[in-house]
Amino acid sequence: MSRALQAGCFALVTVLLSNNVSAQQAAHPEPQRATTLNVVAGAATDSSETGLAAGMAMGWDATPRFALEGSGSWLDRGYGANAFAAAAKLQVRVRSVRPVVPFVEAGFGLYRAWFDPDSAAIPEFYQQRITATDRSVTDPAFVFGGGVNLFASRRISIRPEIETMLVRGGGQNYFVSTVAARFVYHFEDRPITPARSR
Image (cartoon, rainbow, N blue to C red; front, side, top):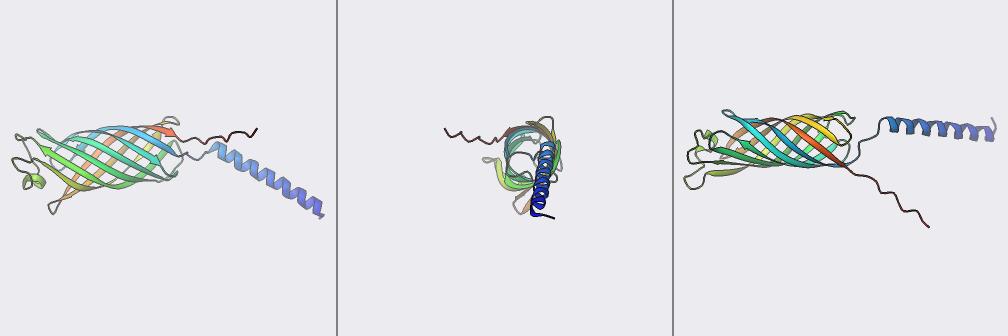
């Protein structure tokens, strides 16, 4: 086979492969990096009480597989008792192809509980650590959970999820689990087209 024919075959194969790769990328584009903002509503439960949970979070998609998120939530812990949970979490996507993107997550944060003087029920975890003058306690907490991003469009997704927070204080563990749904808006990063040289 002549060198000219070899070069021609090589060029043809290169063009066909590049067109095939481009077509595949167009059909299944990789998710872009994005900043996300979401609101959440659901229910939080411990060993004795179930109540409303609501909050907000902001996240950043570092790669198609990994995202970082900071969240804050208010939790109703029954008559005369409330809590606030804040956490920084790493999310790992099990698969990154839209529209269904399941994930698992883990993180660290703080859990603050406070009780009114006439609070009806104070968990044993707090009974020895509150006083008549200071009825609030802040403890470190570890968060574990998972869920699924259901994309309704390129920028909007609904995210049902389950989280468990392990609160550590006074040599004891206290567990609070949350079942919730998040409404997520994705602010996608867009590449800037370089200005044409004049």
